[in-house]
Amino acid sequence: MRNYSILVLFFTLASGIFCGAPQIKDDKSLEKAQEKALEGDEKSVEAMEKALEKDAPEKDPELHEDIIENLGDVNTEQSRAVLEKQANSEKESNREAAIGSLYKHSESAEDEGTKADIEYSVLNEVDENYETYGKITPKEIEVLGEIQDYRSLDTLNLVLYEQPENADIVLHSIANQISTEGSPDEHSAEVSQEAELLLIDYVTSDTTADNKEVAINELYKATRKISETEAEEKMLSLYNSPDLEPEEKKLVMKVLTSQSPGFTEKWDKKLKDDYKKTKTKVERKKIESIYASIKGISLKAAHRELGKLLAPKGPVISIPRANRLRKLPPKTAVFEILKKYKFTEAQVDHMEHALKEVVKESDSTHKAISKIVFAGLQELHPDKNYFELKKIAAEGFHHRGLFYTVLETIHTSYDTEGLRAVAVRKLFNLDMEKSRALMRAYAIERMYFQYISR
Image (cartoon, rainbow, N blue to C red; front, top):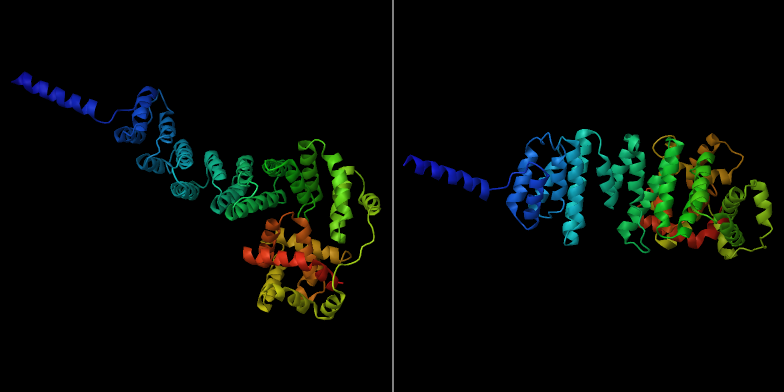
């Protein structure tokens, strides 16, 4: 009888061992559990979770990370719940591996809805880690670069300045948000434009020259995926930005000439062709500046050389309408032109107020965008100093030529309608739809705005 009891006990224990969840102690037992988990065995996933609750064995200290990475291949809700728990682990290596595996689930999601849900979960986990630990890991930074979303960009932008030791990884992730499709959807296009502006803002920040060069390189490489010409045009647009200091312009040209063989010969002809088509002094000065830098000559020499290409031109506008607008007070004339495009007088007042606020706070929160205003004013009043220009800007649209010179600076500084609209949104505090409408109206009425600015 005693022997019978022992046998019963033995088989009971054996049953628990062989029929229950497998125990994971090393790579070999993990491999077996992984095979079963991929076949849909929930107990194998439970075994992985239990192994993560214990300390990793001394002989295999990286077992936890291996388990978490393997769970990235088991795309089930059960596996995802384990990963979400590990994504906030106190152990940094576990957090890194879990975020990477969660993102892997989104890549293999069966439909767009599930993919979006998982990406949303990843963003939440990263935000929570940033709040809890005061930093995020390189792997988390890398994953943020793969999720094209404003939330990703917001976090990356914070990390860029608060974790300067990871600047190169962060800059790469921001650049990764730039769309390389020929015709991206509206959301992708707007996120892409925002990513470009973040890189450009970083180039004008107080960081090191090496970091600025990395940012320029990342912008170039991201745009080159569309085409080499697109990348070259982007660099030339950046070079001519009023936000850049001379040393920053040199970095742009350094990246451009080193990354694009044959650039000088190609653009010598293109710039001359473009110069012949210019309509304003601002456009000509932009090309003269780039031409001088490429050819290694002075601005005066570039002006003389390119000036020979110009043929006399007359304005293509209705003179009676232009004269009627010219007789009105400057701000009234601006409204008279814009009301045709469904802008109200209140909206013109709103834009004027926003511009004044930007100028008032030009030394702090609006430093980058205020440079556009002052670049335009410098063109309007080249003999005035910074403080005199600030007083002029405080007059708002009542000052003749202010509206035109600011919009013209935006028009010539950014090479796409989207980037111009983003700049207008920041300057005048408008929504994107109204910002685009303003730049479209300006493109049509540009010659009239120029005429009434004299």
